[in-house]
Image 1 (spheres, one colour):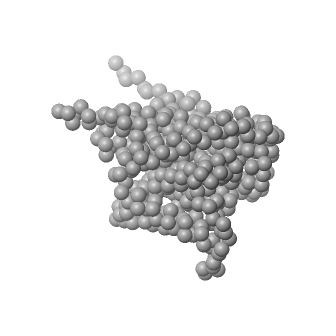
Image 2: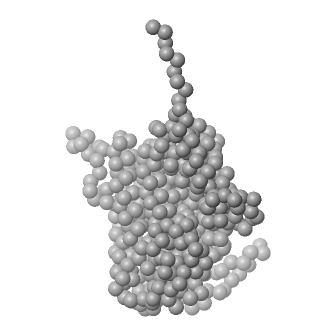
Image 3: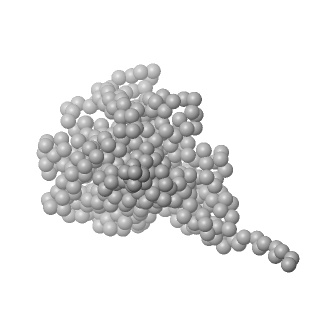
Amino acid sequence: MGNKVQNNQLSIADTLGLGFMTFAFFLGAGNLIFPPLAGFLAGENITLAMFGFLITAVGLPLITLIAVAKANGKIMQLLPPIAATALAVSIFIIIGPAFAAPRTGLVAYEVGFKPFLEDTTATFMIAGLTFNITQLFYTLGFFGLSMVLALFPGKLLDSVGKVLTPILILLLVGLAISVIVIPGSDIGAAVGDYQTNPLTKGILEGYNTMDTLASLIFGILIIDILRKKGISEPAAQTKYLIKAALIAAAGLAFVYISLFFLGATAGDLAAGAENGGVILTNYVIAKFGASGMILLSSVVTLACLTTSVGLISACGEYFNELAPKISYRRFVVLVSVVCATVANVGLAQLIDISVPVLMTVYPVAIALVAVTFLTERFAHPKMAHRLVVSVALFFGIVDGFKAAKVDVSFFNFMPLHNEGMAWLLPTAIVIIACLMAKKPSQPVAAS
């Protein structure tokens, strides 16, 4: 009898553990390196830039998780099967072996390990390619550990949610308090696009965290973990997924706001920094010395490791479903090896390569979430989903080409094209048109 009562309920501790785990999955590399640089560059326009960043880096992932719950994990079910599979595979490749997962290892190296080394310039060549020795060995170790943890996914909730994340949160709270209590430099003038379009620049900067794409995946992963915990009812799964999403969103907003202020008040500490990881490292060394640096390296390494494990296990699960003849464990090993290889490109280069891809895929993800919430209101749900996502993809490709410095001046007449958001208006117009379309009237039967 006791089991039946418990069957579709989680204890408060388990619910908090699930929320903390969701927060830890999201709090990876991009979440720590992008806000400080954005805060520094936004300067006096920090409020608008930060608001824009929070829209795409907190609001959208939260809404996406809820959309995944609403669709019972099948958010792409109204798209043509080939298109749905292609979109899912491309998202898994982006947040897995191509960009997001390798970036976790790189940020852990840059912020968590590199500052302790005196010389990081030693290199060697294999097959005409140059490798940094310390970076290579670090990333091999990092993804080796990620692989081992991902091979035992049943232990994820307990190891990540209940042990690693509370330590991570305590360290981040300490950092946030220091940003408020220890006075930094005066906030400087805005730079570049932050002078003219701080809001849209902040919105686009939030793409870089890749969290909306990750939400499409993590939502499914969390539903899977809930099933393993005995939560089988879709309504109960939705309830707990929303609770977890709200806990994660509150944590992320807290971290981003404090890191934005850290960057905005960094002053000379941020001079010449090519990424936010450098600003973060310089800040901690200046304010807390060596002991602070040890603390920061622990935070960053933990944050990156938990995200890496989440991404690798999600990829393993998905590709195993797609090709059941190859086991989950083999996919985990394969993804981990690819991650370790890609991670040796270098952080700045990886970010440069990823931006055009994100500008293309993000509009599709956002359009998909929008139509999921409106499904019941469409007269022709299947047609609406397909039309809206197609339009978002077309104009997303235009924005992606623009970010890749390809000449797309033909589209200059479009609103928001210069800001990199040409997709927004056409997609909104198609959504409205689909909402206004009526069902064909049924012929009245003769009495």
